[in-house]
Length: 595
Image (cartoon, rainbow, N blue to C red; front, side, top):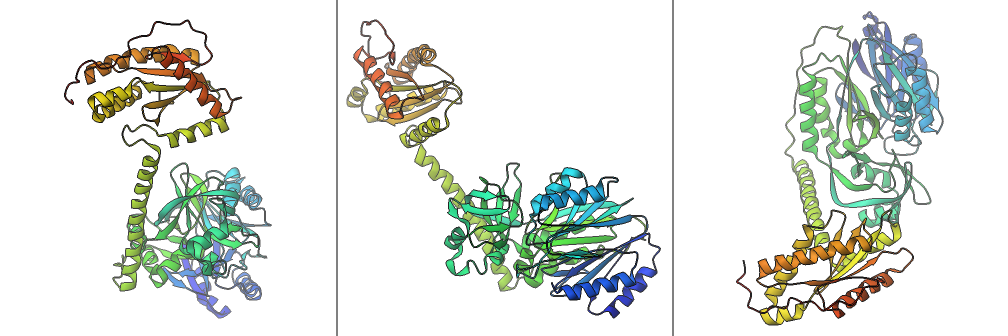
């Protein structure tokens, strides 16, 4: 394989490229055009020139948010990348229309059905294409084909993007080039955007249309967070700098940026934003970006790479500005490196096709047909200019504050829902659990148990509140060791506790509670020096009854247990004979010292 590239200005610029390609014994030729203009007349004129000069070439191209030429960047330029394959074959196809998933299926059916390619390069329009749906459509037909490419740009105007092949320009749709034959492919994705701040939730969305965040219209939410003056005129640019970072179920972090917005206040994202998903805003770390690029370059240098195609998010260019070449420079030391800055990057994550944002993706190729070149990898030292230092410091500071806030939020949430003395759930948490239980229902029986320590005031009055606190903590610890994982113990108030037993009827729960009563009497006598008992009222969680009614029934059963002498279990509505009052376990001697 031979890789060439040039900055195109006039048709005469193709002379040198034509000579270079003519000097190779190539079997097939792929030309990729990365254009910093959406002028259709100019692009049509270029395509005619390419077809007349390179009659056998396969051509695909896209408008961009910036171009990459030999490891350096261009703006508002046209860069042509030529890959002359000695052993591989190339086929291209274009799929027009706004149904992104069907476009993906069409590309895969046409290019991957009869023969599996070694790689599939896909370029899609950056305004109308749902990159996730496109990637999903390709994977549904060709699940194991390495995917690379990106969504076209228009230099942050967010008005019109184009993709094209030899024959036509598309404002909606995608083009693809499939590479067949003995080709080794290496892929890598460099992200290094760090989530900061609290978690937010997507409360309404449809595909890649983001409608509500935390039950607030999406654009209004951005106004609240970033300031009214920035929204909506610069909304898309803002999300490139501060993307949404989705926290997916498999632990993957995936960025999303906005490529358009509607008058209704919806944000059109480059890829899907699942309803119910949590996210944080992200901030880039220049130092991490440069460091990982150097590490990846050193790994690629050990392989016989002949060409590197780079599809990088324009958000990275916004962050690093002219320092973006620090990420690209080491790659050019390995092989000819070309590509463009995208509105979204196509690739594979954990073995599946995906649409990424704020990522640099690499497709490194080799046929092992050219002599190994001398590799000079220049890993730049990150700049120590004040502006760069401040940017890195801001990213680090934001991550530090974010981690501290997360820890504080967890601590605050725990304090809000737990009793500080015993560590049991408090009444606030218990009421939330009961409300959810009532609204969601349960497939198994649920029993409510209200328990109360007997003659607790006498313990406090006789032996002090410290001994009373010990008795409460002892009770909570005792039940924690014996209740099942799905059961919940709640300090309802004072010496009164509520237990929620799942998967048990009142008739099943009552004998078990009597065993626990006997066990607690013995343990309290051993640990405190005198026996402490409790009384319990039990009722089933009847879905036909209001919550207040259920709690009242448990309270009434508890009252019956107290009336019948304490240290007993009563089931609401159960007919039981009168029993002789039992010893309530009031202390008769001074307790031992604290153990």
